[in-house]
Amino acid sequence: MIDIIALASLCKLAIDGGNKVLEEYKKRKFSCEEKKLLVAAPPKGEIQLITLNEGNFIRVGNKNFPDDKSKDPVYDFERYFEAFESLCKRGYIRPVENYLFTLTREGFEKARQLARETDKKKTDKH
Image 1 (cartoon, rainbow, N blue to C red):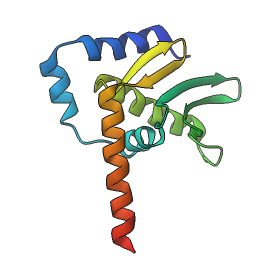
Image 2 (tube, rainbow, N blue to C red):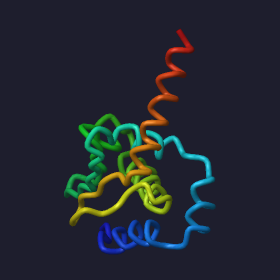
Image 3 (cartoon, rainbow, N blue to C red):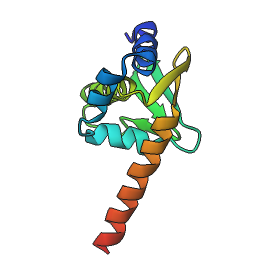
Image 4 (tube, rainbow, N blue to C red):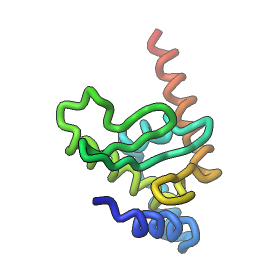
């Protein structure tokens, strides 16, 4: 079960917390899962944690992580959930209410930057 109160506290702590710790954490390289979550979030920046009897997933925009094609949804959810927690620690996500979160200003900026880099890589391949 997801402890939503603890998760919201983690996001808030990262945003309100010490700048040195936050800046050091932001220097870490992004995981593939972190990038996917960020790039999928705009234009609204909404992120929902969904818990169902059938399983858990993270809805970002109109995409689900993991998607319904996952061969190991429990494991894949944990990968994306860890990425979500990491984005909270970086100060890129803040709680709104219950299971709803949103990108911070810095989160939107990083999402747009990653989207441009992804688009550039696709263009360079052609």
